[in-house]
Image (cartoon, rainbow, N blue to C red; front, side):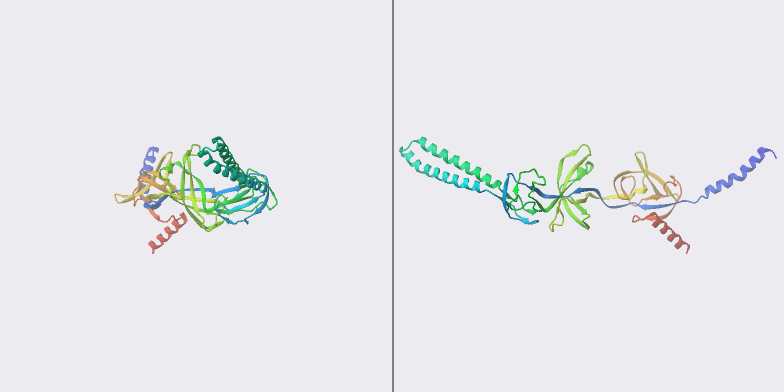
Length: 369
């Protein structure tokens, strides 16, 4: 037999066998997820340090000896309460003297007024006494100001911290250095939490939106609050805007300086979502493989999609799929558009791959029985 006859014979034998094998190729097994509308929000998370609603370090403006301390550590005080008193005996004496001079100047003015009206006294004499009265009144205000500087009062309602002084100590002026601070005072009825929000959420960000915060100090507790204000500027470096949330703190569990994990749920809406693993990305293009029925066969087709926001495990789809579509979550890389597929399991509640495999085994066992 000639060589070309052998080649022709082998071709005639093998080609039909290959075509039959290709035609009888089993459908590609895939796992799918049903596209459905769900409640969806844009989530922003951040770690930030908690601040008191109002807080201040109390220091003295003068150098003077402390004569009285009217508070205890962690005591709740009200605005205007005198917390610390310093020696003001000299100023009190000056105030007494100047008060006497003012009263005397007032009596002279009251005595001269009717005399000037009758022409029995010169107008210049009355002007001189009025000048003395005004000067004495001004000096009393100055002395009273020096006395007030020797008293530390609560600037607002709050809780004082640990006191760092004792009666007899010399109070020293300072700029909130540790050796100059008398104590601290914090208004912790509500707490402030400043955090950054990407500018893409700016159109839906507004005061009143609810936030949740947690801290490792209370791992089983969630603190709720609302956004109270939004900064007027966007940071050109980070492309984010600062927002301030206020958390209620009626039981005073929260303290200034605590590290908080804050979560903002913004722009609530109904959205179509698909599992993150169903998205096939090529450059800037995103596609999904959708299982469809065509000519009595179950096949897959590729669809370009426009994605929106993301959250853990899920992607919002703005365009490209409809409610009820079945998108391939596992097996998409083996499938090709137009290829026959077989649905082995349907992902409904974010099942893991192991759970889907077990679901497939259970299904196969049931079909066998």
